[in-house]
Length: 327
Image (cartoon, rainbow, N blue to C red; front, side):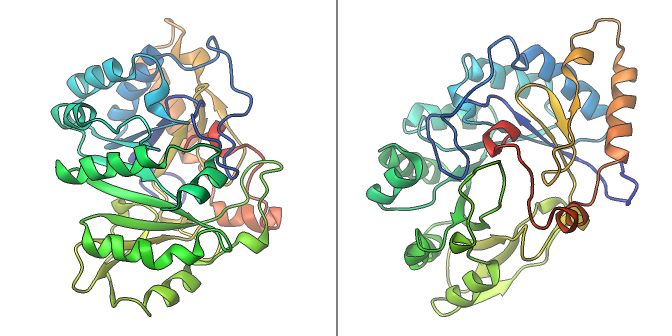
C-alpha cells in the first residue's frame, strides 16, 4: 500500500483506549474521556486488522491512553497473537500496570517481545510534577523485569528543557549499562491549550551535543521500517541513544504509518486533524472486506506530508490532544 508520494505504508498504530492513569501535562490523560458506546470494540479492531493485513500492514503498535487499563485487554492480546501470527505486535505503555513478573512472562508467552515505555524522569518528585501520580516505582520495576526476561525495551523520554534536562547524564548512563534504547522526543505543540512553550523546547541537536560530551556516539544506518528515531550506538555501552525530532528535523518523507484513534477514526498524519470515521463501516455487515480495503487504500493514497502542513500552520501541529490521538 503506497501513498501518492511513493511512501510504503506498512505500519498501523491502534489506540486501545483514550483513558490513562497518568495526567502528563503534555498529554492530559485524565481529562474528559469518551463514553463506552463510542469506543472502538475489539471486534471492530479485528475486522480492521484483517483488511490492513491484506493491504500489506506488517507491524502493529497497540497504544492508548494506557492500553492495559482497558477491560479484557489481555484476552484481546491472546486472540490477536493467535489469529494474526504474521503481524509484528508491539505495545506502547506507561508500564505502571506491568510491575509484576507474571505480566512480563505472559507477554513473552504471547510472543510480544518489544515494549515502548514512557519515562521522563528518574526523580519521584518530578515524576509527580509531570504525571500527577507517584507511580514511578512501578515503572522502574517493570523496566527491571523486562530486562531480566529479555524483552526489547525502548524508553521514550519527552525532552523538556528546565524539567528533565538536568537528568540527561542519568538517562545516558542507563543506556550505557543496559541493553535498551533511550529515545529523546522533542516536545511537540499538540493539543489545544496543551501548555506547550518554547521555553520547554529542547532540540535534538542540543541533546546530541550534550550527550557527546558524556559518551562517544556512532550513528547507525536508518532503515525505512525502523520508525522516526535517528539511532546512535554508544561506543563501549550496552544500549543505544535515539532522538525523534518532529520539529527541528522532520521525518515526514519516510513516514510509513497510519493511526486509528480509540473511537475508530483513521488519522493518516499526526500533524493534521484530518480524520476519517471508520466505525460505521466496521460495524456494517453489508460492507465487505474488499470494500473496506478500498477505503483504507484510498485514504492512504492521500496521506499528506506533515512538514507542508506545519508551514501552513506556523508550527501549530494540531488541536487534538495526544491522548485522543493515541500515543
